[in-house]
Amino acid sequence: MPGLKWKKNFHKSLGAWFDDEFRDLPWRQTRDPYKIWISEIMLQQTRVKTVVPYYLRFIRALPTLNILAETSLERVLKLWEGMGYYARARNIHKSARHICSTFDGVFPKEIEEIQSLAGIGPYTAAAIHSIAFGGDHAVVDGNVKRVLARLFCVEEEINSKEGIAKIERLAQQCLAKGNAGTYNQAIMELGAVICRPRLPQCERCPVNDQCMAFKDKRQTQFPKKAAKKPKPHYTVAIGLIFKNHKILITRRPCKGMLGGLWEFPGGKLDPSLPLSKALAQKIEQHIAVKVRVGKKITVIQHGYTHFDITMHAFRCTLISGTPRCRECIQWRWIDLREMDKYAFPRADKKVIEQAALAG
Ligand code: SF4
Image 1: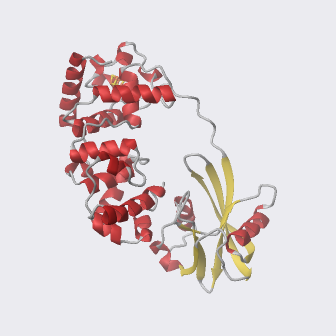
Image 2: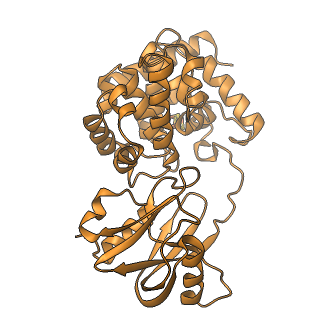
Image 3: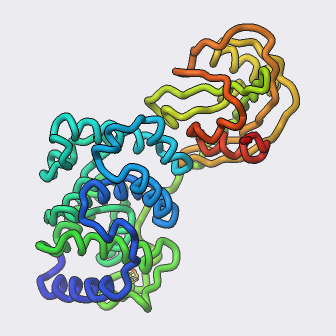
């Protein structure tokens, strides 16, 4: 357990470094809980560099919680397009409406209320409450876990039950009470900028004389992690079905992966069949039409967090049937010039770009 003297020196060194070196990110210029909430949700699974333009665009388009609540989910998804993990966007939209109906449109101040919002777990609630309202809660994200694991040579695997409990205990013990918002941002920043996963910059680190791993020259041995399982790979095919200069798009169910986004009909294929036959079958299963699968337009590779895909895109001709949703919630024939109005998954976007589909 860190002693009082250790903590005092740690807070002093970390605080002085953060004052001098902190990156002037747009969400650090505000205490508005709405804006801090949006930034924290965006930062949950996305890197800072990617988040900045999305955050600025989102706040420009939807500057207040009430405006967000009044806008359509489709617009929110379009603003989120390309950032991935679309459940975050759906949860933000749902929560904004919930805050308007339950809390008179005012972002809740109590941590339990914040944690009751869709998509907010203990980490995000602690971050929002400490930064926006000064609550004394330690934030434990991936950066903080790594820093603490190295500072204290935590031997338990970082994502094991014991490892999580130990890190949470250490995080709460190290917290600068009364200044938790700034402290949390400083320790997260230290992990992001100095105590990096592969090459920690220990010589430049403001707390190196308090770091057990640095003293023992074992910094790259922490955090301890279980061996990663190899990612599965799937073959996917989609059909670009044209009719009278229009193309058919379908909308995914709102729940689940990429929920609520538009896409081209198709999906994961039966590997025992030839691609074109499997795609024709998949399209019929998806949208109830029979197609002739024509020329292959492009092939793209795409990686998701838990699996990778190779996606084959074929030009298809409608043979019979009228689209009817079987595995989707909406369908439309759209003009190629309208493509930009719809939010597509990144893999479909790559196809649109490579096939130069957008008008
Ligand atoms: Fe991380 Fe090195 Fe600083 Fe220790 S001294 S906290 S390992 S950067």
